[in-house]
Length: 274
Image 1 (cartoon, one colour):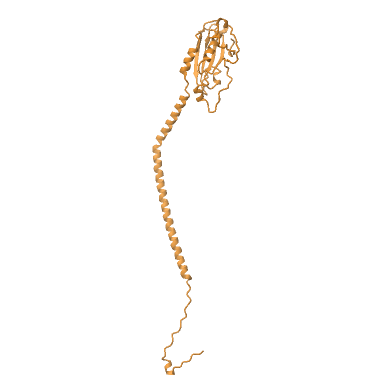
Image 2 (cartoon, one colour):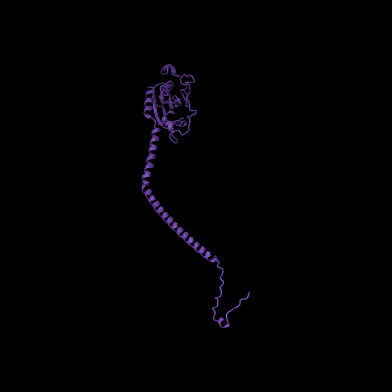
């Protein structure tokens, strides 16, 4: 439909003209949201950086404090180390003393019993007692090193072979003695006829024997863990189970061996001829 101006021509120019209509542009908000998002990310990143930096500083401070405490503790430990060393040394010495006390052998009682048991016609030339430790002296008798236990090695002479047997029977009856090993018992030969023997009689025999104390507390303390009783075939001159008897050459003149119940030794001396 066409518009028609009904005003007279002289009034047409004076009439107010309608303002032209301005067309509104369509507003799109994507840019604002993008800006706000970027700002938010910046704020979050800044907050994270600040928190992380504060955490690193705190951890660094804690590490420095721990290092200072460790240094102080090390210095204190170094200052107290002499006391710890002294305590360890004292403990070791106490253990050593206890071991020595446990491994102590009552030599006084053993010597007293042997002195009472020895017959009057037996004279000793040497006496050697030892604990039987590895590397120790063997006491001069080849049978001494056969058993690791306290033992006493005797050498000497008797008026007769029966006197030697009498001494062996008495020693075997001594409390604590588990084995009496005779190494030799031989009469003086013609080559040594000129030598003077402290024992009386016709060619008095000289002997060498070893007295073992295998069941003593010292032997148990010195034995290694798990060790069993020695089964070394060391000759035992007192063999009560055998019941055998051997009469010495000059036994008729010396009589019975300290009582009729005492058995006569059954083993022949290994070191010489009776």
